Amino acid sequence: MASRKRKPLSLKEKLNILAVVDANPKKKRIDIANDLGLPASTVNTIVSKRKEIEGNALVFGAGTKQARGARHGELEEALLKWFKQARASGVNFDGSILREKAMEIADVLGIDDFTASNGWISRFRARHAIAYRQVNGEAASVNPADIENWISLLPGILNAHDPRDVYNADELGLFKVQPNKTLCLKGDDCHGGK
View 1: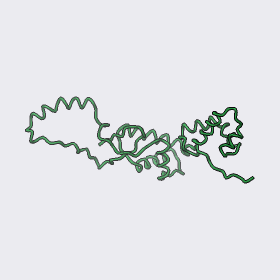
View 2: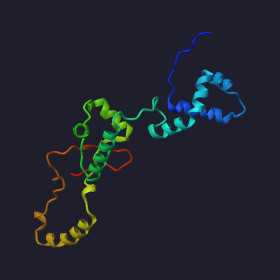
View 3: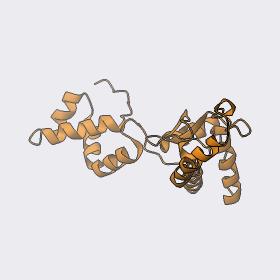
View 4: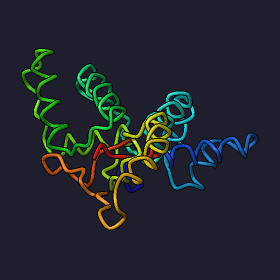
């Protein structure tokens, strides 16, 4: 009998195997394994680790092959907390600022073997569903009370000036040329602080 080459299965493939086992409760696992072209021990291992596989699929996503967490979990938690607070404040930033903050947090936590490489930033973003998207307007910095106040003040200001002296100055929101793209959580609105 020729030996089979090992093939790592993704969590999605393992979930599919569990679905086949569940759909055929009277069928022997060795027969299911033969139908799937897998060793019986692989199917048995997957069935015995069902809870772990289902939990990992929820945490890491079904498409991943290995369910590994971050090497420096405390650093990731602190960085994610800072990221969410910064985005809630309307701060726009890219990967370089995220990298600097990660290095700063690693220094505070006394983690000497940490490097915030491009690969680490990319995996951090993937683990926490962080996207790099276009900033949409200035909606994050508008207070509804200020809008109402401005609407009541504007007619008086306009009446004091000749219409030919009134101009639209909408795009004066530059401050040190902020980026027009920013990192934000997938599914969240991406408003800027222009």
